[in-house]
Amino acid sequence: MFPLDKDKLDKMRQHALAEYPCECCGIIIGFPETKEKDILFRCTNIQNKLHAMDPETHPRDARTAYNIDPRELMKILKEAEAKRMSIKAFYHSHPDHDAYFSEEDRKMAMFDGEPTYPDAAYLVVSVYDGEIKDEAWFAWNTATGSFERHSN
Ligand SMILES: [Zn+2]
Image (cartoon, rainbow, N blue to C red; front, top):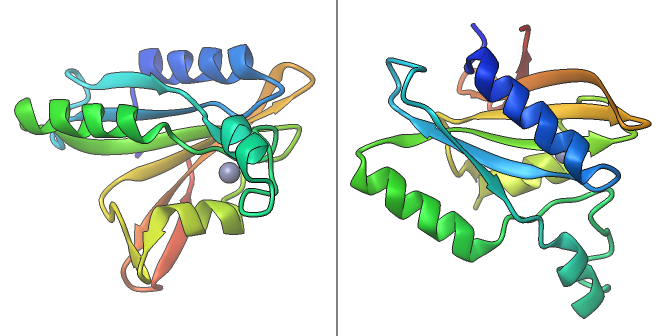
């Protein structure tokens, strides 16, 4: 079961194309039982800023990494709480790379050895030469203790 409706998928793809050759990132909030009220937020990828400020701690720039502006993340979490919604998905793009869940992606999704949002899906959009090539979503699997790819 794909976690998003077509409209949100289109928005996510448009965002991925708009940010190419950098990675885009965003969040979808909503109610678990329906897709109809889902809200998609485009987030600012601050990876280039982090890389410029401290290249030793952040060796990658926005072409191969993303970092959601923490103030935006906080705002979205507050809005979700006020609406009694939860985070359904995080999405980001892989410019000139396939739609896999990288080691960096795993690190970003974990905190202290546990998934930070165990119920959220993680969508990865692959863009090559300014065109969508593929997309895939990943979710935490309690049985295997890792993020597993789901078929669309
Ligand atoms: Zn990634």
